[in-house]
Length: 220
Ligand code: GRF
Image (cartoon, rainbow, N blue to C red; front, side, top):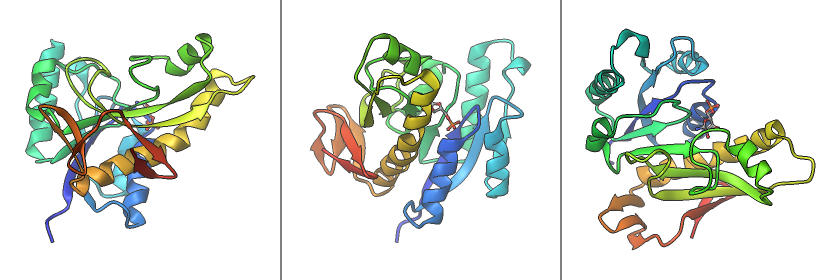
């Protein structure tokens, strides 16, 4: 058997998506090894989750670096030292320098709480409500230099109901995120997904539109 996919997670906050990955691994659904959890926030709750699960942690505080670019290169040098096969951005709230990302093309994914290409950036729930959308969702995409702009692998959707507030929508979406992200990581670990020159392939076939995550399974 080949060795498990080595994963580094970058997160700035509470880490519920990382917790979902850990839980999927516990259930035997995700044959991966978490080699690092890195954060830009020294008191991020995700770090405590990692320590409890005996996953190595790294905190680099942007305040200790004169330039954004210096920070990004230092961070990715340290991440590279843990030899990940895949980097998962799970609520990492910083824009990363495009040159620092280059070596990781096709090896870094991000979860974003909108149906990309709609609503890149912040306040996605608020913006979906304001636009009068009837549907909202989350996307997992490969990371490129363009913020939330890389090729979308898979999405989960939910209807927006009358009376939904920003918080209500975020709360309804989160459990879907917690199924979407492990499903995508599981498919990468199983070598079913890849990013090539032509785009994303799933089971060797080019993806023409994002996969849908239905009951924790990715379907075309
Ligand atoms: C999630 O909504 C994710 O989509 C976004 O940031 C949030 C992170 O939440 N990128 P958590 O820290 O995983 O709980």
